[in-house]
Length: 402
Image (cartoon, rainbow, N blue to C red; front, side, top):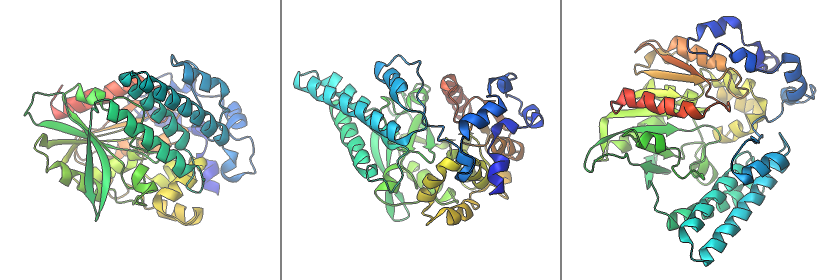
């Protein structure tokens, strides 16, 4: 479709838009690929759907201190699902075996750590498999098996929780703040993206930077994600405020939560769903998004064709035609001006998954409350590590724990 061709090349992002983003790195343009070279590498087959764009997320960084990841960077074929799944599964099985060996030697803590490593590799092997792939559910089951083994051996930093949602239950992990006993703490709720899977190989579950700053952290397999999608067939809807309300209602039942200091963080597709929650659910007092978006039909469906099968699946659409029509409802048009809380909009100039022009549109439109802030170098970019601390510091400032 013509919109694919018009939107697919981020390198056409205009200088005018760059100037409008106040915190954008001045040299960001110099870090992008040459337009002609980008076309040659990323669109090698113009006759294919979506212009033949490659699955650019299937790349492994070679500069890594972990020898297993460094080896994966050497052997995984870029943009190749078979290679990606097979190699990550191989290292998952290797770490699982090592964990079993350590356990038989009585080295329980080390065994738990290696089961957690195995969970990380199984998760990565799983993440891009489509619903129809016969390996999807067995890989997910292995992920859960080794993840549960790890946290049976190791003391978990989280509480397993179940959140009521429209007659069903959503699985989540609640990470309590590092705060004095009996003190109510603010909470940051993480609204994940299209590839969201609650279980991971991260020892702190991504919560460490928040807990260290006196905030609790809640992560959930929400509609269209993880267990909710794969096991309970709970699909995502455009009105994410329904899910946001369920989470806020549940947080209100906890005695260890400061009910007046709730915040929401959105990553990837959460760059749309989190602001949408805040347009209705006023109990969230701050919102920060890792890859801001405004209208997902344009910002991800048309912009990044390789993700369409995942989006179709998580919405419950029967085919791409219906999926694109359903995605048109995932928009902040007519709603963004109802966002009253402070908002931090993240994006990357070189993000080839989520169109940063959607982040700019969100930033320019969400002006009813405090002046929104914008930061470059997040999104689906590899230049993100220090930005995680920036986000945690921003939440700490908004919630009064800084």
